[in-house]
Length: 186
Ligand code: URA
View: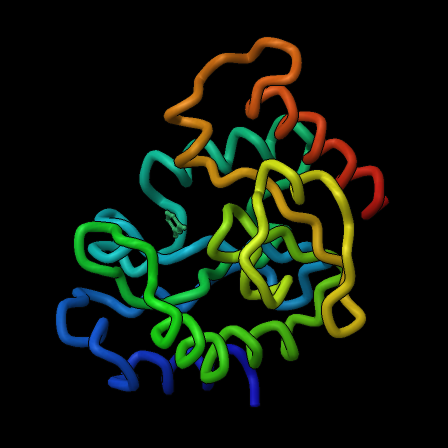
């Protein structure tokens, strides 16, 4: 199995109701040998239209965050908990997340074998933590999932709603978090 074959299979997925309203399956993209993998929640409108993860406003901010730490977007692998856009950008339902991650995300992780995974936001964090946790409390700290280091960070959509850069603000903390990831990878 490789990522291209897995992506081809995912394109035909009808395992949950999200398949009915999608324009594209947003499988994920990036370096197949990435040391760093980033996992968001699910495609938004732009991602659904283009078939690529994090290409809308959140994606542009994610690119800036990575750039600020000297991590080229092309060096990482980017995916989401669910591969099809939930209507109105609602959070995925537990069964949608469970179905999609066991069919696709777990296999993507097994193929990429990253050293570090960054779950962005509470939905992605819940998958790796196995329980609902506060992203505000969990961000910026490592824990382990199946031998991989997990480092939760705020979702860029949350940062867009909280633009302050003051010391201690979500944006300020995120800039610190990404530097720590970079240092750990080096
Ligand atoms: N938000 C996400 O969680 N994922 C995307 O791909 C885009 C926006």
